[in-house]
Image 1 (spheres, rainbow, N blue to C red):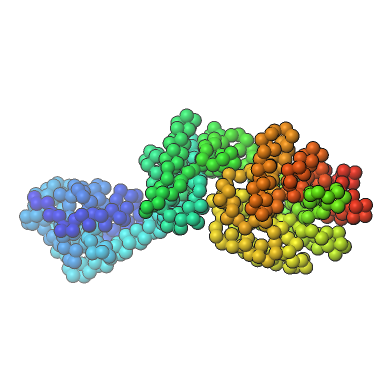
Image 2 (image 1 turned 180 degrees about the vertical axis):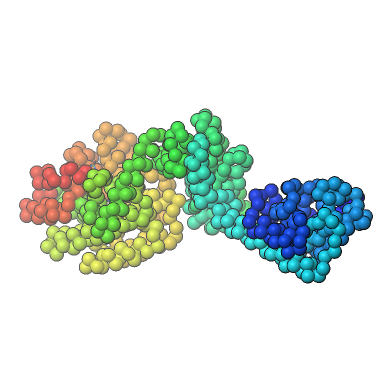
Length: 622
Ligand code: C2E
Ligand code: CA
Ligand code: CA
């Protein structure tokens, strides 16, 4: 017996065969149907689709034969592939020196006659053959050979189709930049885990400083950072663990079957450590860091599909306490998430019911100038618009929570409605001579990042019959966190160029360095109430306020202090040279009609203190 020699392109041929990922797969109707047809049309007891692997022939489809595979040395088809352009015809195997001693001839299935059509792929490699076999010697007429040629082409076409489908499916599940499974693939895995009720640990990973690198050093550097992060993640976990890219600079690690909290913590620490080294890119070193959130199914959250969101919730908490940390999910995260889901549902029913937001309403709070003038002469420099929203199903939700909970699209919806009301109220007050200052509008980071935000605000202002000269825009440092692009900065500069003032809210609560803050074209800063409320209690707060005021003034920025509740705080801020104040001591945020009365009283009596006039109705709202 003489085994077939190897084709000259054997290595490439094998690589081509393996690219079909068809070996050892289940039977498929398309191929089964073709071998049945081949057997019938050629009147043969046996028909096969045989694929020639390194040391075996494996049958993708079989008719009249039980074996799944045979050694390659015994395979007639290993001979057939040597001449891809022609069929191999053996009329009597016992008379052919290549096959006389072949165990498939001397024993079962007692092959006598064989007709094999090579299966040639588009690159010219013969992957195997479609063959028919007889147990008696026979000849094959040209019509039979032609029939087999046609059927072999059909097999080849099906193999191609199968490979294309596989590739498309893979592409749809793979992130092209890092080669990691994408969000869809990860969600598929989590769905499967949920269906089998298996434990799984989820580590959500969010890169720190990504946006800074991407904007500051260019997209190639950003890509390099993501690829390096993906690479390190893959190397840090075991091959059986899944690393996926969820989008942007978010990754996830799934540890299937792991419930031991200590094991998960160790992996999380390893992941965190791996992501806390700079990345070399050309001759530069790119800064890298990461914040992690961990959730374990079923301990922290019952259901694998929810686990990712709970891990994200923990991650958000970790970010709030400073980037670079690791936070483990708590029962509270799951509770919080359920509440957020209820709020989102209520919000959506509100939108659906009225195609606007019936539960939304603006309250306005005066911002009052300090300075060495008698209290009665102090000017109101702005009215800050603050969102209020309530729904019968969930009650009144504080805006601080609401904007963070409902996601960017709904936040934008609510923001728009609140601005509309604020601008209309302000225009009406101006007409009555009750407001000559500005209206201050809060913009959440996700709104600021919208491509059309400057235009959209300018349009709203114009529609209200106002100009941008009577608008102040309050943004938070959050716009600088990983997200701010030059386009955003241009948008803010454009608003400012048309007369709006730009103020940085909650100053002192974030982590941005001064250099970062100076990228923003600012007119003023608002000192966060956490400092104001520690004045007189904590000397450090006093020093922070003093330093901030002097720094801001040095940069030509105005300083507003918010959250003033006591006379003592007011006096200290006056002494510290703060420019303006806002707080319950002067006025609470008020609905438009109450504000109108308040302003009216104030002008009538020229009385800046509102403690006696303070509207009771608004107390509840805060
Ligand atoms: P913020 O912009 O820092 O608004 C100031 C918050 O301090 C308001 O809370 C206000 O009611 C409260 N406040 C004012 N004076 C005092 C005081 O003397 N003591 C205390 N304890 N609090 C005082 P509010 O209305 O609950 O808003 C919370 C946050 O929600 C806002 O913080 C802002 O970040 C966000 N927000 C509110 N309305 C909007 C909006 O229309 N759009 C956006 N994007 N965010 C909004
Ligand atoms: Ca504000
Ligand atoms: Ca604030």
